[in-house]
Image (tube, rainbow, N blue to C red; front, side, top):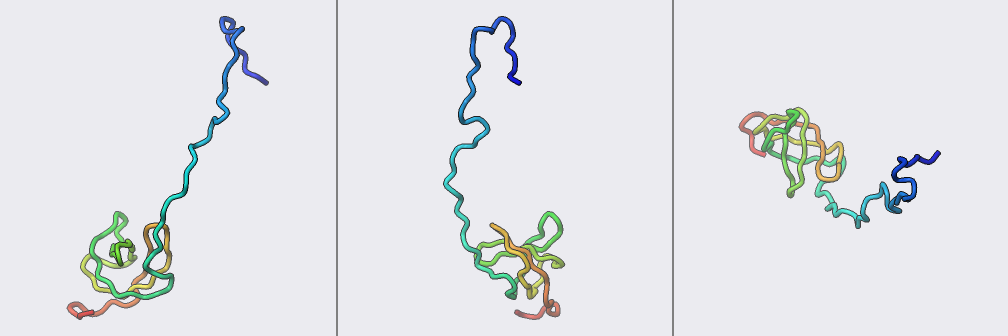
Length: 101
């Protein structure tokens, strides 16, 4: 059922844009290929701590959140999940303190 106009606007017609509820055209966003592969293992040093308490490291500028790692740990990780601009990993092996990787 069409909406009724108030009495003082009876003679006017209401314009509706043909582009209503549409966003401007987009031409895609560039997502660089990740330098890590799902299931591969890497030896890294945890450089920071994420907001949820996960360890954070980078490989070629690609952020990796490591569950179960603490700041300063040198660990061997396995990539479990890769998203657009980050990856999630689990600790596979944690060497003794002071051991060189």
